[in-house]
Amino acid sequence: MNPTINIENLSHAFARRWVLRNLSFNVESGNFFVIIGPNGSGKTTLMKLMAGILRSHSGKIEIQGRAVRSYTPKALARVVAFVPQRLPVDIPFTAGEAVLLGRAPYQGALGIERKIDFEIAIRAMQFTEVDHLSSAVLDQLSGGEQQRVFIARAICQEPEIMLLDEPTASLDLAHQVRVMDLMEKLKVQQAITVIMVSHDVNLAAMYGDQVLLLKDGEIVSIGRPAEVLSFRKLERTYGCKLLVDESPLGRFPRVTLVPGRYMADS
View 1 (cartoon, rainbow, N blue to C red):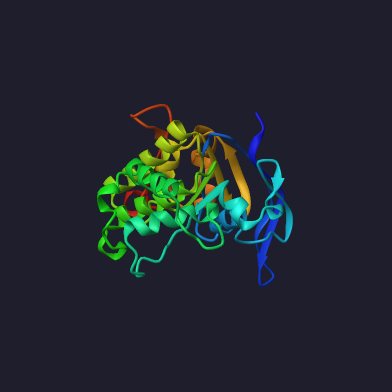
View 2 (view 1 turned 60 degrees about the vertical axis):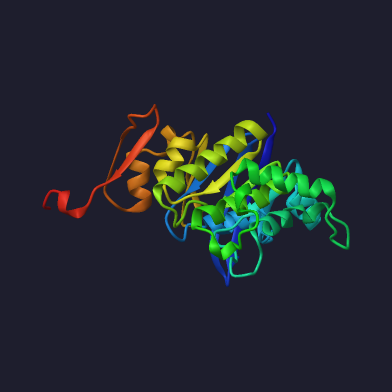
């Protein structure tokens, strides 16, 4: 199977400080691919490079067999949808208006919506279960509702690849699971390749087909959750005490932090 994203020898720097160093990996079509790692490991930068928001200083990024920089912004937006960590919610848009913005890559110079654009927006909101919030102003919604609205906007782009930067950050447990189940549903029912940054290694273990573990801009490990989320790799990467065993829910790892008060005196 040909990879939907191919990255070779990718490096990137800000103000002469290298934040990514010689990354090479593939993401297969239809995978749920989760990127994890400590703060400052380059996760968000990697997502922005794949989304075409940043241009890499060296190396190659190919989307569907084409160099990412060869796409026009509109053409890339028809293939890749990006949901960043934070989106503005203080603008006076309703949820329905925000979702409809996802049709911009398919509109002409005047930006006039067609009947099909409204139909696709409605289906996206039904898929994410926010259609009943269509008339609500964004800043009146809960964090979980806002996140699902922005995912609906990304679905409106009809992408083949969905990039999400920490979509469960600041959400309570119920909304975290709801968003993750939604990503799984996108993968299974719409054949969208999902690539997500997460700080939650247990969510990565439960949902990820493949996991990429980064530290200081370099790859520590890549593979199936059971291969990547081992005690030695995680403790070395995060620099803290933890336990790794098999989850009672299935054959994937469960990671438990060990607070200092439970450690033996040295």
